[in-house]
Image (tube, rainbow, N blue to C red; front, side, top):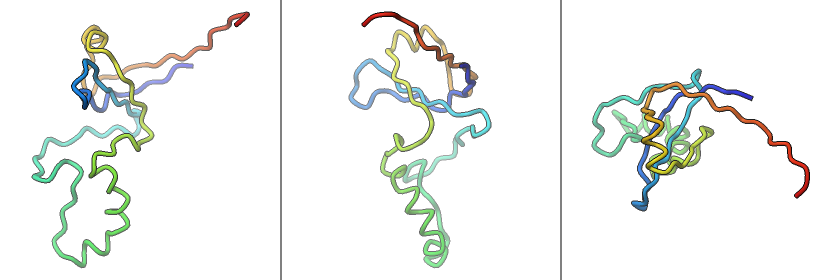
Length: 109
């Protein structure tokens, strides 16, 4: 099976170890992240009134895990690469990649 993806995000390992986490999105769902500065982080929402916030409360609650750094709650595949493998691949955000998955047939244990 072959499937195409777009490199959506590349993050350093949070514990400082020599690994990177690469998040892939389906090309149909990929939206480049905007580079606008948001003082409270990229996942915050802005409201002009309390009424607007209350009206959008279900959306606010649904995005709460993302605001708290819960990026692992997405359907997008995330793969952990060693720094060496990452550098050898030379991928960057926005690159198109193809995954190929095949079952290895083996006899015995």
